[in-house]
Structures are given as C-alpha cells and as structure tokens.
Image (cartoon, rainbow, N blue to C red; front, side, top):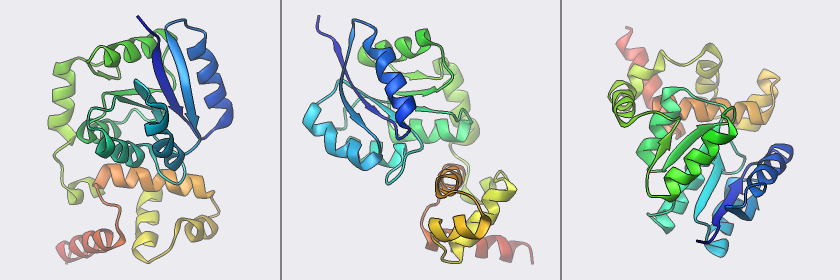
Length: 216
C-alpha cells in the first residue's frame, strides 16, 4: 500500500517545519506540499492532490475554516484535519458543521496525530479523540445557539473589537487603536465569528442594535 499523501498548511514557519519533519520521520507518510496561508492552500490543493490536508485554524489571508470551505466546494469528499491551539467547543462545532473530518490541538501527542490521520484516511473522523456520543452532546449544547445567546460568551476584548468592527474599522486600524498586533486582532475576530456565527459588518451592526433594543 502506498504512502498517505499530506498537504500541510501552517503560517508559522518553525511550527510548519517541525510538523513536516515529524510526519516525514514516519514511513507511512509523504508530505507532498506546504502552504503558509489559506490562499496558498486552496491554490496548491488541486495541484498536489493530497489524501489528507492538515490545516492550521488561524492563518492570514484566509483562515483554516474559510480555506477549508473553499476546498470542500472544489471537492466535497476532501479529507481535512484542522489543528489549532483552541479546544473550545465553539471552534469544534464550527469545524463539525463545516464538514471537515478531523480536529486536533497542537498539544496532542505524536500517537494522537497518527491516530487522527489514520482514522480519517480509513474513512472515519477524529475530533479531539472524543467518542461519537460525546460529539453529539457537544453539538446539542453549543451548535444550535443563536448569535444573541452567544454574545455574553465573548470576552471583554472580543466585545470591544466587535464594536470597533461595527464602527467600520479594519483589522489594521483596530490593531493600531488597541496597541495589539493585527494577527491578534484576526484571532479575536475568528473567535467572534465562531462564537456568534457573524463575520459581516452589517450582521454585527444588526446584532448590536437588537441587543440594544432588548435592553431598553
């Protein structure tokens, strides 16, 4: 049987190099491509035709969820495993609803990563090593919440950024205003999207109006 062909997408060079080196240390894997952002990932996917995509959740230009969505439009059977530092249920639910096959954290053991790759390659799924019953419980807890109900789950910083986005500020402008990096702003915006399901400014404005009216 041939090697499992992997395409690795990770914007942090050191982490990507370490992951590729780890994967290539196993005889059953072949890393056929690397990408440092979501746009490069969707460009390389049809060219290298991997068996599995290992994709970081937080990447510039296009994050892991958005780039995965575009790949799944190209090929609804694409096998994608998202990896991230986030293990909150909101992120996991978004990954499940999107239709990816796996979700792992950066802090997992080598054996967990290999289990995830093998499970997905064999036609199964792997979500943080949880059972089907646990996944169903998570989906029932958080996957069906409305945006208004999730607003209170935002951190103080996320609410601050949400209001600035509603005010028309870009990520660059927000980073300068709050004295934080643009990458940090983008990570907060991704978290906001995962918790509320909103990303467009018009949707955010409508949510804030609705919340304001409900408090009168």
